[in-house]
Image (cartoon, rainbow, N blue to C red; front, side, top):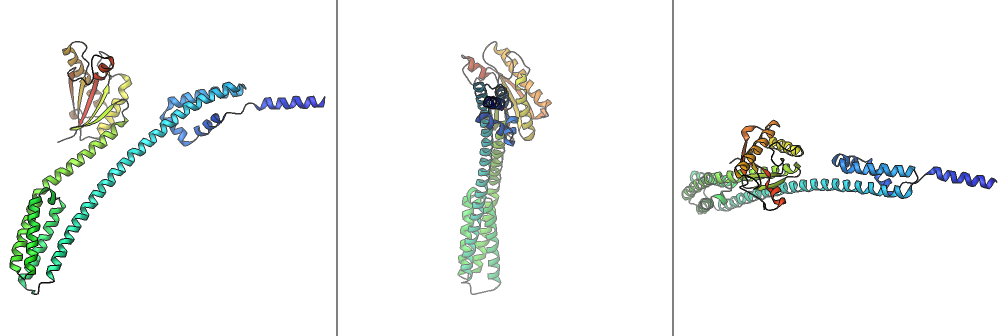
Length: 366
């Protein structure tokens, strides 16, 4: 009798203990509470919401001691959670990749600048060593020699300043003439011909100054072009926040394209695309040096004239929306192209969908 009571008590204790959660349920509960887990929830609320719903079912099945149901629901919850986690990790990796690309680009710039400085310093040192070698052969130390030395020093400095603006590249022949004259000046000084040395040094400085003047506009233009290109690349990266849009680096700036932002015959922006245009507006405000050319395009269905009018109305609608978000209207221009510039085959449904698009060109200044 006593044994029976003990057995019953043991069975009741086991029954009250309930089911243990599966390993996936435990791992989900653990990861969900972490900082990374909460970040995943913020980034992908829909996926995590599905995971939460299925996990709730698994917990209910656990309470009801339905082991198979608990394992199934827990498995589905874990799959939803893992999907969200993987996407979040991919987003982090993409951000790291972009940062590495920026860091690499910066290192390349710094390396190029360092090489340029090294080249300039080496050229200056080489010239100085030539002069020092000649100086040791000069026995006289009179007014003519002193004057020659001063003119050679002036020519040396002029060559350094010319090379600093890449005159050896942008004004190659004039710069080479200056170097040749400097060499003649140092050789003349070494032969104790200070008057000849002075003459050659003056000519060397004149050629170096001319090379600098010739090179400066080209040097400035190249630097400006590079700065403009860097800014365009920065804009291209910034527009990545606009989901569902296509970006492209094009001649004159950066193009972003959004397809089917309107109903079939409507001119009001589809609410589903409002957020995309809001992000474009925010980016535009951060890149105020770019003007915006907004082009509306349609497929070839219907009357050409009406399509042209429709595309223009849609472009103006986008312009108006961007203006309400703080983009100056003076920076923008709306153009309707109708069906004149298709990017896909109008014979297919998919092609026509691609042709119904808004293109916004962020045009850099000249």
